[in-house]
Image 1: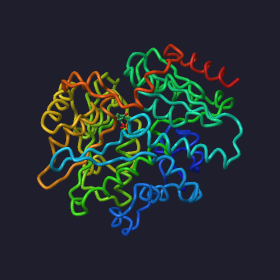
Image 2: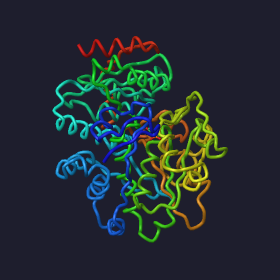
Image 3: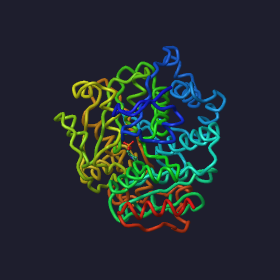
Amino acid sequence: MKYYSTNKTAPLASLAKAVTQGLAEDRGLYMPQQIKQLPQRFIDGLQEMSFQDIAFGVAEAFFGEDVEAEDLRRIVDDTLSFPCPLVEVEAGIYALELFHGPTLAFKDVGARFMARLLQYVNRSSGQTGTVNVLVATSGDTGSAVANGFLGVEGIHVFVLYPKGKVSPIQECQFTTLGRNITAIEVDGVFDDCQRLVKQAFMDNDLRRQLTLTSANSINVARFLPQAFYYFNACAQLPRQLLSQLVICVPSGNFGNLTAALFGQRMGMPVKRFIAANNANDIVFQYLKTGHYQPRPSVQTLANAMDVGDPSNFARIAEMYGSWDEVRQHISGATYSDEQIRHTMRQCYEQTGYILDPHGACGYQALKDTLQPGEVGIFCETAHPAKFKQVVDEAVGICIDIPDRLAAFMKGRKQSVSMKNNYDDFRQLLVDSGK
Ligand SMILES: *Cc1c(COP(=O)(O)O)cnc(C)c1O
């Protein structure tokens, strides 16, 4: 499979190049040249298949031309070391719980898959030097990527995060690891971190010295595997409900939603999608007005969605020809912090289900727009204990911290402080490569 850039001026890339390089030369995002339709018997047989078998079928459609079947099978099985169950919250509304992985957030799936695919690609191409993975995070990406890559030989991960804007529980998940993981605390906001990373990728002189790759959701190896759990969610619903299925994705950089849209192209039975935003409602405004206007992000309770210029929007625009077509598939929703708190409390009181602030946006969007006869799935993108303080206060409870989360909190923070300055960042990378 070849990958083209959404900006259309970069040459086609192989999978190896798309995964290693992340962003195309023209700053576009890579898209597979073809989105293969899965056979009808695969779709009809979902209910009888295991998560691993479903994921392998989906992975083959994306990567089967480039990765040996046996290796792909192993990569998929290693990635999915945990379940993604569908839990009925109330009649007709289901939570797709994506927080049962090592860092308790959905990004574990993409990050674990990418780490293994990058290692495969490197070995196949006889790469000998260190590959430097650069990742900007507003919270959960950093921990998922750092943990996904921890101890993987030949790879060094640099996690950039905005100082004071990541919850302490999130922070400890990528600052306490050490080994091949360097955490960099940037004096700025998430968009600054993302800009520093993007600038490094455009720095040809630097790239002659170091092999750089990204692990943000722009990487095809990260966002595509997220389609696995959407198919698996369909497999967990009674077949007769599928024609009325609405999938609602709490969105920040829009990688997760894009994967779901790919799933639909491949034949997954979904009626429509909802993109749920917090106050950073750039895509909501686009859906309403047809104008895409990025703006600086603002801090919210659902901080992994605090994105002012969602990178994967370019992929969504590419998938559909026009604003009208986008609107036929996706509707938007936006919630303030006050509404998020209210939703968390109300959901707990009425159903006993504990939402995290991100999932709360998804749940509320279904509550607000689900039509009679429709069934809704929203992604519970993180475990509520990752946002313990916010959740406890809003809901008036004291939630337990799962053991695997508590283990991170015992570690010692080891991060490098940095100004929001590209030259400093560059120097740090060069020094670490020596
Ligand atoms: C990253 C993240 C999101 C947003 O996902 P995108 O793919 O960037 O849209 C939502 N919720 C949580 C908990 C996240 O970590």
